[in-house]
Image (cartoon, rainbow, N blue to C red; front, side, top):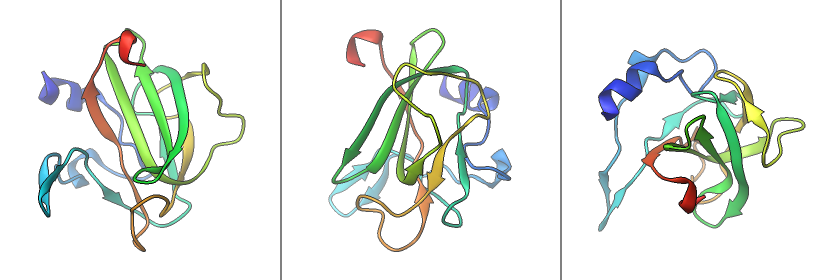
Length: 130
């Protein structure tokens, strides 16, 4: 199911080809698994919605920094974008977004370190977990 979904999703970074993304989801990071795929890009590069949907939550956390939670139209899939420098203008919770809309810009917030990256995380979720 995830492989089929991945073929449909748009790349989350402007100018990035899907074939350029190395799947590091669940890769070992010290003593834990990193449940995301980091994509290194230049600071300020637009981070784009991978699918049509709704912005469920805008949040800043110690680990993820400036983050966006986006559900697809069916509220089956939740996409998590982290380590953003800042949000796109006028982005707000409840906003409807379309595949390719800018959500924010690549940064180093949270525990990203000094290398600018975006952290799209794929995950199966339900509306009760928003």
